[in-house]
Length: 129
Image (tube, rainbow, N blue to C red; front, side, top):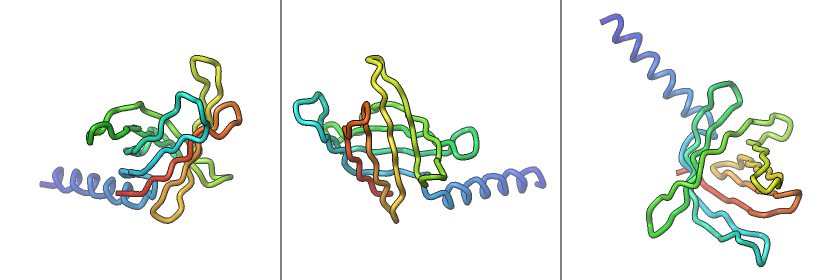
């Protein structure tokens, strides 16, 4: 019985922690292209954000809605940058382009941008479900 109580307390504390962290959860909204004549397409997106393996790390399962169903796009790891109060990911793709994702929390909205080589590529507006 004592072991079960400890397990329940651990699960409850994990649940409380995730509920208190404003980034953790499911987010849904739009990802809108900013460059004309690019391969970019406007999308309805769903992001599943969870805590990473260390403090200030987050994992986002990024999906898009296709024919009414979630379709996986990929997993992105973010660091919380206290200096700008935002989730940030910087990466270089296969074509050696530098992409920077930034997501700022504004109430129940998570507003993001993707810049590629310093040029605004996407604006993302998602709301917590």
